[in-house]
Length: 129
Figure 1 (tube, rainbow, N blue to C red):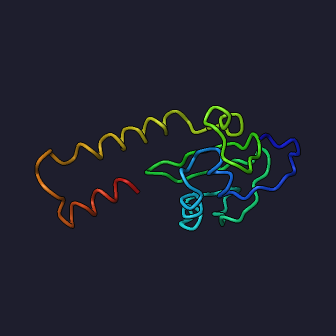
Figure 2 (cartoon, rainbow, N blue to C red; figure 1 turned 60 degrees about the vertical axis):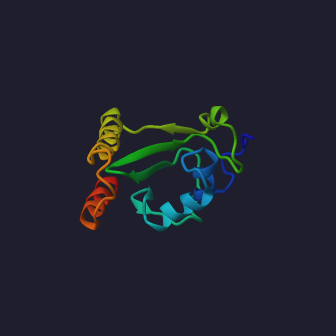
């Protein structure tokens, strides 16, 4: 349900989960712990309270995604409804860059060559981070 009170309090991990940026609240809290969630140039903890019109930066696979808080949610809702509470303001160039990195990461190894070596695994992990 939509919160009528713009001053209502919602934790950042709960909001990220409710608007479907993360599949689970645990993943959202983990991103906060790894300092991947930034508000006002400060890496935030999972307990940080989100406010209406905050801009949230999420460091993800070579780019930083940007979201604006349009409403506060306490519970997870359907994907159609969740779009009313969040606005992605990431520049189009960054989204295209992310898609290129994501697509290229899966074509590095040829099919049937077996498991990656330790060195290859580290190189793949660097691409993904």
